[in-house]
Image (cartoon, rainbow, N blue to C red):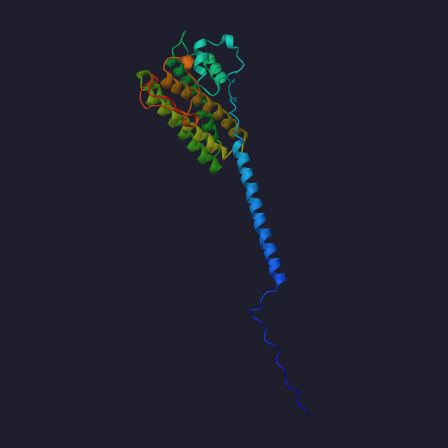
Length: 266
């Protein structure tokens, strides 16, 4: 009986050279992947660019607890001193209405008195904001996030009130640079309070407070804008205009308070 000789199978090629068809498929897949990534990056770039060009709309100055200043007041009923001074703000109609309705201006007010009146309006609204945030805190015992946000907000608003008080002390003394710094800080604290509450906006009460803080920020911004024009142009309210920066080609000098020295365009 003959024994069949066992034939070993040929060894499997560990490093076989890929065929031309396989190489072509790999090349096409790689090119398609690169094209897809490039297309996705391009779409993402245009999406971000489009979002950056859509700036948020100006704050809504509607206040839930009190009748807001009406921006529809006839220009004939606005004293010329107020009309000229409010040209320095981003929201001149709201500025005019808030000053007229405040009844806190003497006849024929000078620029300093107008600015002080705008600060007074901001302070009165700040007191209301403090009360509203305190109400949020009192009703947030079972909500730790809202409790923390309300406490931080109250602290920021108290700091803001202190800075406005410092501004009111510095302005009549001719320390306009100090006054601008304090008022800028007051505005920043108000914005911080507003921003913090937006993360816990889970009730109508918080929503109303956020809306009121938006109006407060606008009023404080108006007072600060008038201070800037007073510092740059002095008592010549006819030259007052909204604040400008280096982006507008405007470079403000470091000297002079209320005299307009060392400023200009480049």
